[in-house]
Image (cartoon, rainbow, N blue to C red; front, side):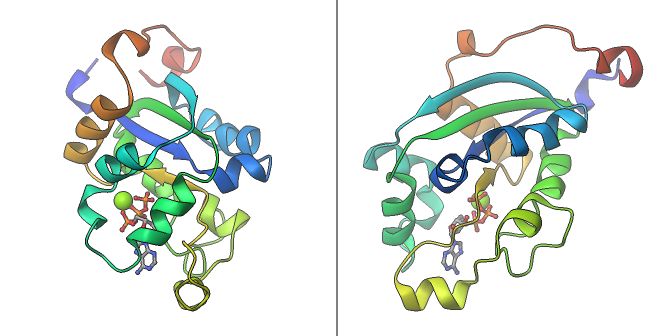
Length: 163
Ligand code: ATP
Ligand code: MG
């Protein structure tokens, strides 16, 4: 097995996904693609964790909306594992702005929010989900959200076919 191509990536089902009862629907998209859930927990994020997770956005105008949204209710943090998982998961998730996200993607199929609307309303863009955007970001984020002992090793049936 060419192990160097097996990656881990962090996914957050944001508070809007939980409150809209979309956990199972969204998770099934990843499961159906053959990605393996190797860690998962429900977390009510505080301001400190929000600032660590979104450190690159702290000085942007929209950060205050983002923080108030991400701390507004519990979310589900997940580590997914698979072949080129970082890129594959971003593809399944779709563009950041639901208005631009293509049909067939999670953000395109289950949301329709737009930057213009959110910025005028003084709220965060409701885009259901976060996914690490690069291998480096994934490594950093998996470490931020999970201890090594919370990440599990087991076999799925997909491994018979794709690995
Ligand atoms: P995420 O990191 O949540 O997966 P992303 O990687 O697609 O989303 P980023 O550029 O990292 O997009 O932005 C992080 C979050 O900040 C977005 O999910 C969105 O909620 C918010 N955001 C980003 N850019 C803007 C903007 N121009 N106006 C309002 N909110 C924004
Ligand atoms: Mg991002």
